[in-house]
Image 1 (cartoon, rainbow, N blue to C red):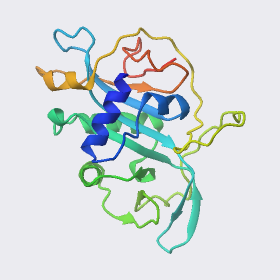
Image 2 (cartoon, one colour):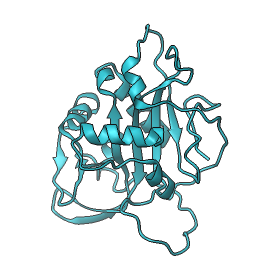
Image 3 (tube, rainbow, N blue to C red):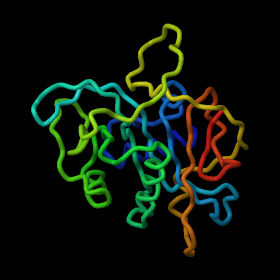
Length: 228
């Protein structure tokens, strides 16, 4: 079982989901982007420990506006978000989320959120003033201002893949560049033993999918990690 699998299980348990929605196999078949927040200074581990992760991806959606009209859009969606229970309310979630917004060049109100928990809704309300939702008939939540600029952030499409089975979670079709990284890993369970002595918080790592997800971290370029 990979670190991604462990994190996915922990997130599913925290959200009371029947099964994980983030796993190594899904990251192989879906071009989602996974941001991981790590502490590389955990004593005794030699590998660092995972604090949390944030998974995003572009999805084609039909959403309703305030007038009840249907709109076909393809926004960046928040698909899974988890910070270890022992490290919540320390600012790590905000740091991770903010890093994603800056990297993806998107505003909070432009996001669609897949089945947000009450805790996530409170997080978005507190940190980004996202209070008013626009009711939908699907599992996604969008907020007031989503239609303000008439369109979602532009993205580039990859060449179409050969015929294959349609996956239950949409592809993001994002361009990505493969890069080899050292193979080291840690498990989510290590996070409970974290003891930070102040100083700057760790930079989130960025994972984009490729063939082999066994090479996870650390990245030679802090803050941005690509799996190959």
